[in-house]
Length: 377
Length: 86
Image 1: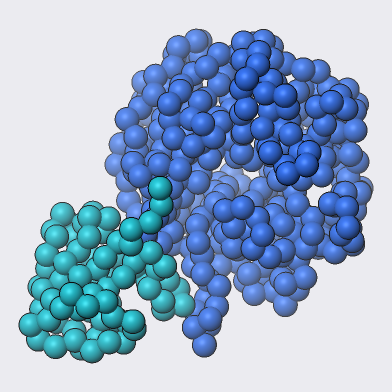
Image 2: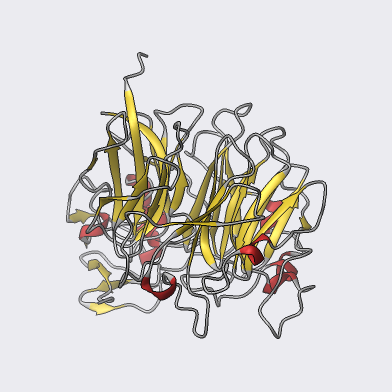
């Protein structure tokens, strides 16, 4: 099949449907699509880098149960998963129920058709047929230690398994983030898991040795140096360089008046020392809005030793933005394009690695996730 | 019996709002609809066999408490989307 010419695009998942933002080749002008699955709560929309015609969307509605929709033609037509992610039925009917599919991760290039999905409540699922049918990863979902890993239902919008990461060198080497519940690592494709929480702070009054009280918000692995991971946590910004098993709180180098609390984190696709965060207010009642109503992205170019503010083009004041953990991303352009979506429906972009920002779309619904893509114009 | 399908589920029924079907219980009826319209069932009943929290079923204009409620020929069954949100 002839592959059509594509241009930069963003897949925007919102509380009321998905939207595609299509940019010109220079990423200067952007046009928002009509809604896709209007009214559905779309938690994640992801393009398959192994076959860019394939898009997956994790959706549910206020009334109907969770599912996954798949497109094989860049989003022109969609088919629903024949068997969406679901926990095993318990003998007494009191087993866990998937509330929503939260996170979608395409598999390793050596495993075409494989996808992993994280759910709320904490669950990990695998598809081997491009998202048509899903099976639980029992090594996590049914693991006798699960209750020692997973925190309760206190997380707003439900506890989540997120940041499903596959080591690009080895499809059996996985990391996941649990909110709450910390970071887990598997080296056998998900059959067994080990905590990776050393060095992470927890909320005062909790025991940091208790996996359940940890709360990584977003974990990223560097594609060119997969021994390096970064993490935006409920309690700071961290980096780890494997085989070390201890995270370093690199967010301590952030300006004190800004702090190092937030949800998303995104990495430069070619430079393992460069990463961006979107700090939010973590004081008192955890408002999770731009500190002082002055939104800014912060970048490190030395693996977290120093951070620099990037706010040119963003509102100077009176802008109380909240950006969720999946709602900030980078493309592979040169220079890298950066994008984030806010809960009040704005999408912002930078085509110069964060140096300056432009509002690409406004008046969208509450943005849950933003992913870079390439779509036919 | 006649089955009324709410708007949220009509993408499965080809847009049909009213269907004819026969079953001995509400659960059996929903199973029959899932056989006819694959995917319908999981959107309505969770993996543990319970009705999704924001859906209800009425039989002859009365809400039923159990999916095992019996049905008879000529009953009118409606799947109802709960009023919620703001």
